[in-house]
Length: 256
Image (cartoon, rainbow, N blue to C red):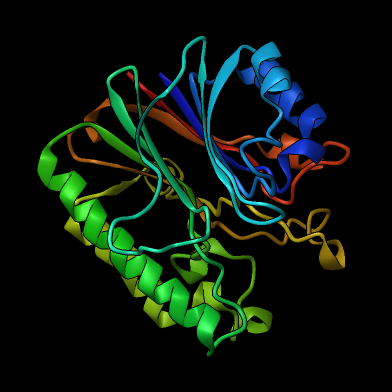
C-alpha cells in the first residue's frame, strides 16, 4: 500500500504536474494540502480522470486539505481537530482507506513570530497532539500525513542562519513534534533516510531549488500498530523540478 502526501500549493494551478506524478507513481492514497479552493471549486472531474476519488475540506483562497484514494472513495471520519471549535481554517481531514486511518493535516505556518499567528500554531499543535494521543490509544493502524510546517532538527535544513527567526525552527513547535515521536509515533522518512539530509520543500526565492537549499517539513507519522509494515519511504524530488510545480515535493511510504 503506497501512501503519499503533497503540499500542492493551489490544486487548480497544478493539475499538469499532479497528473504527471500520479501517472508514474500511482499511490493508493494521496493527502493534499494547501488546495486554495472550496469544495465546490475543487477539480473533481480532473482528479477522477486520473483514477482517484476525492474527499475535500476546502477554504476559499487559503489552506484546504484533501484525501484521494485510487479507485474508491475515502470514508470520512472527521474534518477538524477536536477542541478547536470554531476553527474556520480548513487544515485537517481524517478518513479510512483500505483498513488504515489516514489523517491529512496542514499545520499553521506561524510566521511572523512572535505574534497571533504563532500563538495559533502552538494552540493548533497542542490540540493536534491531544487528538494524536487518542488515536494512538485506539490501537488502530493510523498514518498522520501532511505539511507539519516544522523542521524537526538542524539536520533537516540546508542551513539555519537565515532561518533562525522563522516559526518553522522555533523551540516550541520542535518540542511539540518531538513529543509526538516520544509518545510512540514513527517518523517514516527519518527512519528510512537517517544517514543523509532529505528535503521536501525548496522556496521559490533565491534559487533555492537549483542550489538544493531545502527543508524537511512534510512528514508521515506511523502509529506503532502500522510501523512494522513500513517497507520503504522517500521523496519524489523530480516533481519539484517540473514546470509550474509546487515548492514542495511529494513524500511517500510503502506499507507491506
